[in-house]
Length: 55
Image 1: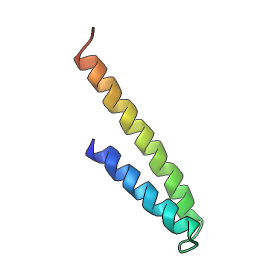
Image 2: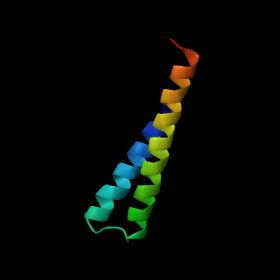
Image 3: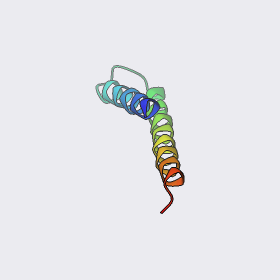
Image 4: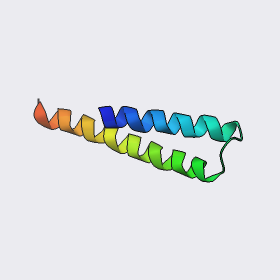
C-alpha cells in the first residue's frame, strides 16, 4: 500500500509543477508512468486480497 501512495504522491507533484510551467514536458511523461505504476499496484493489491480470501 505504501508503494501505491508513493506513486500517487509523486505523480501529483509532477503534474502540479508541470501545469505551473515550472518543469519541462518530460515530467508529464513521468506522471503517466507513475500512474501506470499506481494502477499496477492497486490491481496487485486487489488480486492479492481476493486470492487470500476466496469465497
